[in-house]
Image (cartoon, rainbow, N blue to C red; front, top):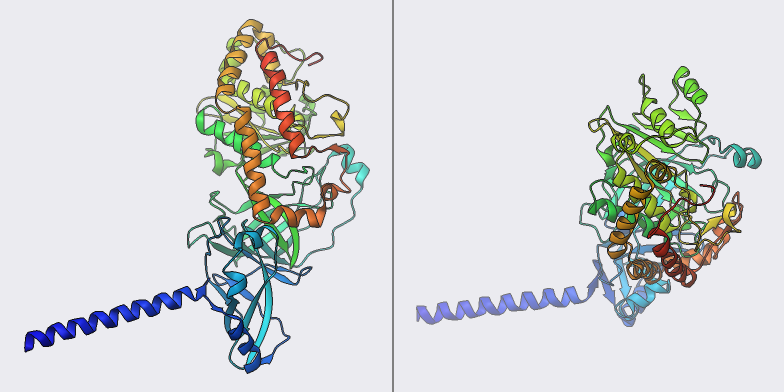
Length: 542
């Protein structure tokens, strides 16, 4: 009897457990993003049981207020590109209900086409309706007071490229990253931000510098989008590029070289984001890290110089920066590390300029090899040729001096004019057959032509069989385009800026190739370079 009772009790317990599991399964199947799924009858009942509220009801994802798009009167809800629902959706008040016939099907199609999806909120007495659209990209939302900028003299800026006054704006920033882990999916902190750049300063779509700060106004390093912890970030506007993918693919290529070859220091790392500023949609941006002491793990005795413009400093200018204890020369060349003046801080760079950038200089091979990493010098030169980085022929590179080795390295940066895009300085040139001058490589050639030709040919052949593969680069461009398209971000960006409107007002004319033209350009230029690099010689007039 007792045995039958125990067996019966066990069966009842199992049945109850199964019922609970089944109930939980049913509840789970009727929820999405932590919100309740409602059929058409339930949605109609919400409106019938309560009063409609016209007051705005903020929506939140993982506890952070979603970015709001004033133009569309809708919230942006970032999600993963593969269509998996991630995170918890909540409201300022009440319970969130999602119409099941709209939210349970066609998710990725709705994402790609920026479809507006209704969200109902009810507390049993009052209800309201809001709209969201899905994004498959990470999203950055900034709330800030914006200071009125001082008018700039375009002619002066265009001629001197002098440093522009910074208008500091303070506020807060929220970063949404559904693909991250739970801790990194949302980041909220204080912020100082300002416009950055010179040539692109007047463009309709701005680039930004973001400096993260805590409540005390101190630097607040955060790991954004898995790019590493830092308090200082750059948002690139991608304004000159119709495809919006050049910077990303070029940055990724250099960092692949850095990962494969120890003699190539790491450059900037980047991820696409969409930006909202004070509830205004601003478009697709590239969030990038800076090349700095943390990225390169520099010591106090190392030196990092940032070369911005193709006018090289003279000895009299070195005298001036030393006398005035300045870390910057005319916004063309600066000491990026260390950040404070020390006696002799310019000395390594003065030696570098004397060796590579003076017509009267004629160093021998051993002197160059002792002074700089030759493998790195060649890699940067070939990287610039392969990407056709016309704006990096002289400028837009870092010179890194590692004191422990007593040797220099180069790092390319700012790759917006690449793979066929160019500013007005090269509009009359056939870029498929243009060989970019490179002072460092040409100095090697002058020291030993045959040795340089042999090294260049061998290195080009090796890179062509690995990282400089045309199919791989074209596929990378296509893959990044699919991300921008599938996320809906490219459609939103083009709806706002058009193909060329982002750079409207910029300082120079420019050529912008579309994706098909870019893919064709990669093939044609590489075909030319294969023949040229097999028997390298400096370009005429180089």
